[in-house]
Image 1 (cartoon, rainbow, N blue to C red):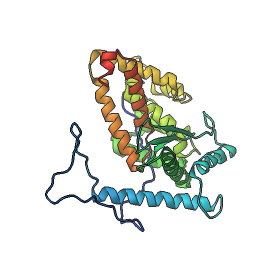
Image 2 (image 1 turned 45 degrees about the horizontal axis):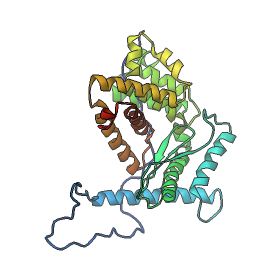
Image 3 (image 1 turned 120 degrees about the vertical axis):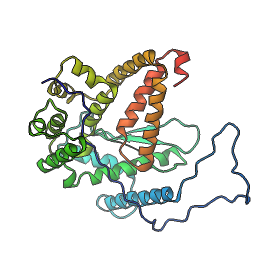
Image 4 (image 1 turned 90 degrees about the horizontal axis):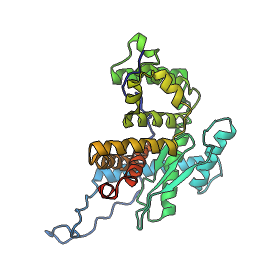
Length: 323
């Protein structure tokens, strides 16, 4: 059966605390202004959008939840007291590796600071399983941004170790059931057929049993990118089956070669449809910033941005200036 050109079902859920009143946090200071005076703006700049009360409350609750998990982890590792979250995160993944977890790129946690000449600074951390998180607070220093990224990554790492977040037979059945309802797929023959979208998703999950969803993230991101980039559609047109595609990419690492190839695809699109890269880049940056501020897993939007930025750098100077 020929490969179906449908998106990969499934969604990796991340731990995020629900909204609620902040506990023990000082009230947000509101700058004083002259009654009736218009807000101050700098010529050529857009007026700043002030965070709503709900935004402030959500960030406060998120910080409390992260601190609670980090402190709990500290009690079980270094005893009572302040924990070095950067060291704790690395130790967590080294522990998983020593217990038999197999990581394509080793157990090293990788940090990446976003270039900036002034605060707030932003840092991203990529875990050995492929998941990526970013600093979720406004950080005055690069070191604080690194710690902020490590905190949210450690919280998710610990949360995803819970047995309910492991890929087991029960987890596969529930995930397939959820995907079937979401995508209106799942006729009896489709669910077990790896040439269908839902069947391919099942095949991927069953091939990664006993792993956590964080360890499964890189494979999911690869297929998300292949779908976004149009590669899956091109393979369908060459009569490749989903099973062949899965077999080929299941052991591939999301590396510079794959990013470069996708960047070339977008350069070709730019030549056919001018400004398509700048539009796609704006959407990717907005999605990335939204995920980062909310403390969500963000490997997919970050990879999209990196691929599009790479494509921009290889365009003619006049075109590249529009990215």
